Image (cartoon, rainbow, N blue to C red; front, side, top):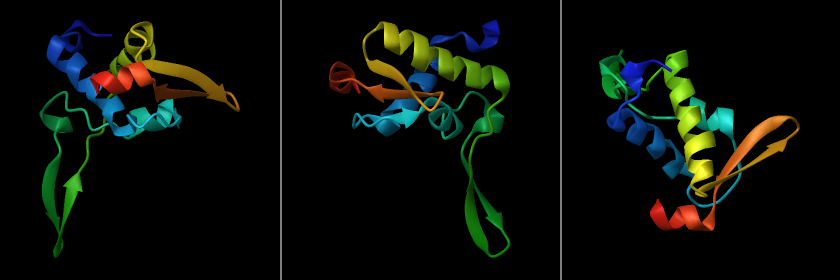
Length: 105
């Protein structure tokens, strides 16, 4: 992971990804990372754009190193803190927030 991403601000942004599933249900880790709204730079900021006659949100498209940071925070750091549980279904990695983790999120 590049050292430019290894800052407290970016780590906190990656942690916020788990808040979307804080109800304790199991989700695929890759799907959670794909749906992450974490903002790491100007290009990944969520913006409202006019397309034709309608307005649409421009959602972030994360770079591979940004996805690695999100996965490291979710799968390693939050797991070691006991805030998430890990599992697998059909060979795909799954994650969920533990009751202990729900107290913090």
